[in-house]
Image (cartoon, rainbow, N blue to C red; front, side, top):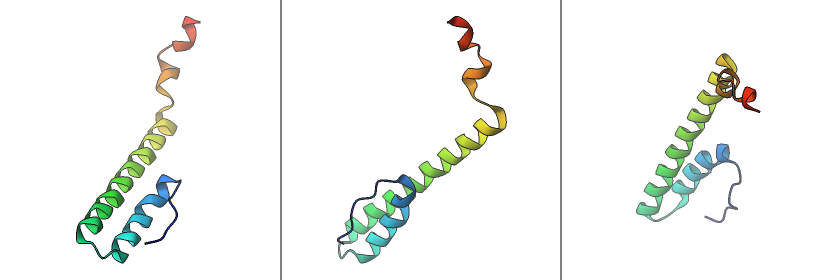
Length: 69
């Protein structure tokens, strides 16, 4: 289990899954699986947010925040 820490969220899920297979501790393997699933859920939310921003534009653009300056 000698892997360098990841600095990108997109790499965290696969790295945690791989680490969970190589550990001898069942509890640590379960925690790493939770980390993998959680990071994949976060990445799906980020992708959905970017998709909605591209489809409908930025929310601050439509609310008139630039008019206050």
